[in-house]
Length: 147
Image (cartoon, rainbow, N blue to C red; front, side, top):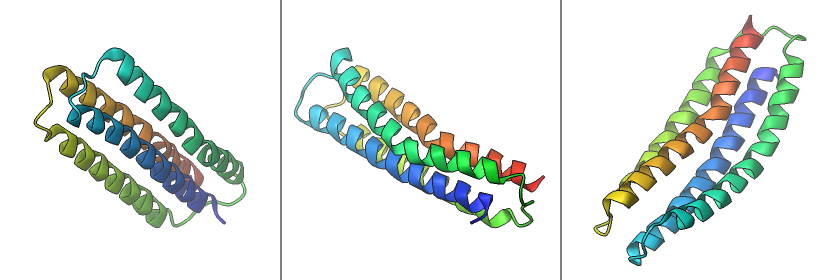
């Protein structure tokens, strides 16, 4: 398997794992909001801690795949990088749309107060940054492999 496709594989695994973790985290937050519970700092820290542990688990195998792909870069010069790049960008776009949909669903709750909106926006941006990290590294790796 070429290095470019290893980067695609790593991106797909990471995005799927982080998307599931993000969805689970936001579902927990939405359940608390719908039950009328107050979203305080301690509650959000507990939810974020679980999320970060799940993200670390989801990123373990993709990081190993990326390291292996970087070791393959010097062996063969990649000629056709367009398809792997398009696949990675497609995976990232689909995942970001999914994150936006989840955020929109939670924001539509009638029991949202201003503090909860701020916390959910923060969680969304943290999730988006973590979700896009491996695909960005993969894009850089593919570009490096082609030169």
